[in-house]
Image (cartoon, rainbow, N blue to C red; front, side, top):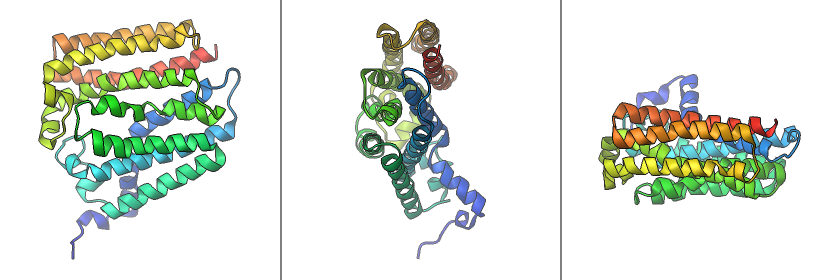
Amino acid sequence: MKTLSPEFAAPLGVRLRAYGALTKPRVNMLIVFCAVIGMFLAVPQGLPPLLPVLAATLGIALVAGAAAAINCLIEQKIDAVMARTRARPLPRGMLSQRETLAFSLILGGIGLMILWHAVNPLTMWLTFATFVGYAVVYTVLLKPNTPQNIVIGGASGAMPPVLGWAAVTGEISADACLLFLIIFAWTPPHFWALALYRIEEYARAGLPMLPVTHGAEYTRLHVLLYSLVLFGVTLLPFATRMSGWLYLASAVALGGVFIAYGWKIWRNYSDALARRAFRFSILYLSLLFAALLVDHYL
């Protein structure tokens, strides 16, 4: 009989926190934030109806948490050898594989039912597709097999504002696709900054991240190039008259800082610089979407 680790006898509060950690709450918060922004931007004037917003927010958060838990389940051996993930519940033995799978299925099932019954079927199916894209296509197929995992897999991470838009309108518009493109272009430089200063850990884990397969110098150049691509993409909402001058000024200012980080990473790299760039990229996306929201109501 398999001997359970001491953590299995932990107090209820500790175990609940372990379940919460499976959902990657900080990442989930950014996902939900972008989805909510999509809900508000989808309404030309005034505010979106409260009940669909609350239901969609809860449903999307639950399914995102379920996808994160599946990711933790599949990558538990990889997490155990990486410094930034070895404290997660599964590597520490705080939860079993069976508990994690059951938790994910229950969480995701509740989330999808909420979206189906309290929002609309389109949002439910799009959210389910996003779940499959992240938990299966990215985690199982792309991440361990190709250095382009972040580029291709970024499609799943870029879906939240589209989900929010569909939750309120029942359709996907060109403006929703622009929000998708922004996050899609943001994802590679965001994650490659992390991969640069974690290159030894990714190599030890056997993951073909770009700096592992193509070298740090090649990756640093691509962080800069994708920063430039991102800058151009973020101008599209203004060009299509989805947003106004406040957003444009914010996008230019934030994009300028992002490009400056990309330039410094390319020309004068240090791990400390890559860490700052990674942290800024999270702030960047939050501020950019906040600027879209404020501009929308001016």
